[in-house]
Length: 294
Image: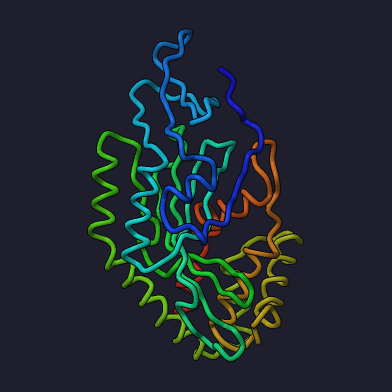
């Protein structure tokens, strides 16, 4: 059984879709996946997609969740949060699946210059157990397409692949809807406050130095670039704590070098870093540092 370990990243715009079935059809995942025994490895099973392509090898007790079942939980969030489908697709050669939701212009900071933000929810799962079912609350600033995690200690929810995963995911959908709304409402108020909080160049430098440490010339260059984006980045004037938040996220989104590898493209690495990895982790520290300036 040969598994494709090469690059395989696919992202589709599904904003015109009105149902999970339409989303699945758009990304080519409308057929159920299957688990099959592997004769030479009796303690493992192979995961095959709806077109009989091998996707992963898992242990024989691994609980497979169908794409339709996974996306139905996301659909419940979509309806409860008054969002629309946004993007969907595969990563890691088809071993990971994602779907995002969006609410456009949810936060208006300065609509006169187009400084508004969309609320975005990302759902990730995997067919090989490499990634838990993951739900992440994000924001995207439209003036510069900066993506950032919402200010919330529970911005990421993870559910392990287990016999109880369906009950746990359903429990999250049933109980966390209001918490998601509350997290976005809290973030909105924080943004308004940061937009009114003046920041001196010295204060900005100190925050940037704490977030981007290092003695090398490269580390120094990174700090200088972040400061430059705070001062004169897209939609920034270098005057407020909100400018500082966006200078940092602009660097993470557009300035930071996201490299490709043998198994992932630059686009895939950028998305996973923003929604699952180091960028998402850093963003919580950014919120804390900038809120402390208030």
